[in-house]
View 1 (cartoon, one colour):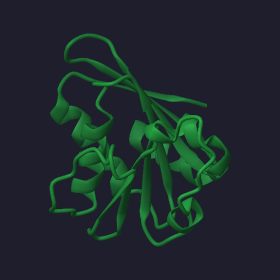
View 2 (cartoon, one colour):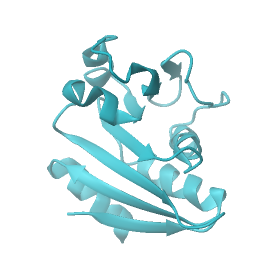
View 3 (cartoon, one colour):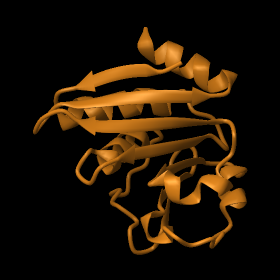
View 4 (tube, one colour):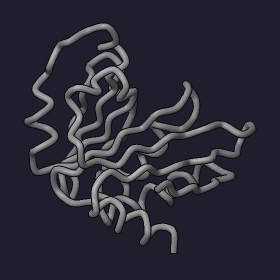
Length: 150
């Protein structure tokens, strides 16, 4: 099943992500797909806000993983640079750890991703509007999506 949300501003995108954040639990994995400028990092900033992260969140493009402290740790991964690579940077430690993992460009590490996860696709409709589609894998993520859709 899929769940579609439409946001008209970056603030709405962040608010949706904040609502998601309070429903997430340790070792949850959320993947974000979308073209450059679709709002993946904006969405991650919303998750960070929902987790109480106070540091500025920005794209970890050159470091691959950035860790932030909040009510739960937030592991923000941009794995774009791992395209055509089979490098495992210890994904299991993050995915099975005590924090929330957010993975941008997940198609490049598909073989390392857990089966239970929340895949999110972000599509640009126009300069401001985004269609954000949630694809839950696992009963816990189904419940989370049902809660958000209410």
